Length: 83
Image (cartoon, rainbow, N blue to C red; front, side, top):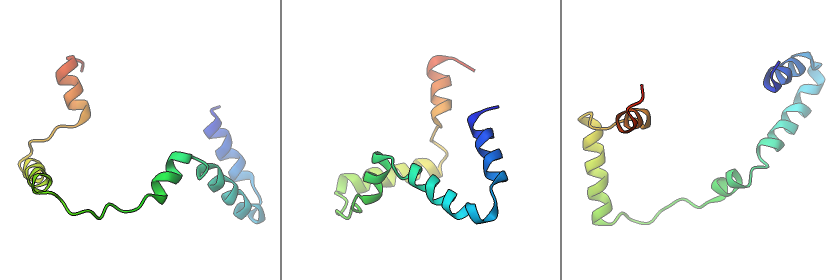
């Protein structure tokens, strides 16, 4: 049995009164990630786009609309020749 499966079993066996504290505990474990915390606290990027950035964004959106984009896996298969 994997840890995830074991955790699911433990959660399913918890009495209803213990669910809220268990949720808070699990959320505190999840929220302990310093990278995630930094990303959540980062200010929004509100700088205006430069003309070059705006042009690159327009080109990217056009490529997307025309189907000229490839997933990571498609590029990997193409470059590495792996199926």
